Image (cartoon, rainbow, N blue to C red):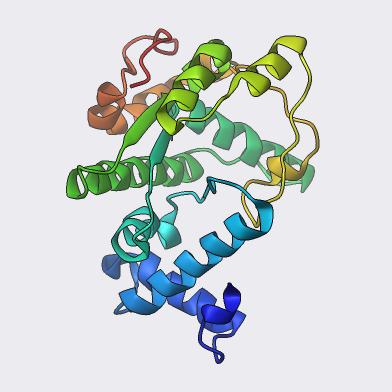
Length: 248
């Protein structure tokens, strides 16, 4: 399969092509080459499917600054049947995760904890990532999209997994059965991504520590996300997460 790529394509060239296509022009992206990008990633996905026998390949890339246009680029150039699972989480929980993680690291290094700068940065990232998904959804209305809230995935995991299975037309019952036994999940194979995926066994459980520990000023900062937070059923005036069942 990979023999279909031009013989001169090196990993560095593939990375450069991917970066310049997936980074928005206003964030420093270069003029894109859709034909080469589409060939590269169509070939990679087809090779993965061929090698593993999988009917479906999951791309868990985040919509970060350098990959903001990845989903749209894959839809536009690969001509593969793309489906989007859009995972969202209460922005206040994201703020707390950043606050807690940054402070632990800084305290271990002997520095004073940091707060507002990191929180502002993560708020901007949260808004950009979800705005990109909404823009892609509007630009390609024929592409199926399923929004899943973290609070539903961790609060009613069996039901949420059933919904995902229906959306993807795959049987999630073996996963649900494993969930009922309390057995952990393995992170599986991946390239890059969150380091927690490589930390060993994974259990699905809610982390709601932010509801009691998030500073008041951070609650106020979260109001910057109101338009999208409201769209995703997060009531920023309420100190706790939105009720379960708001995934669409």
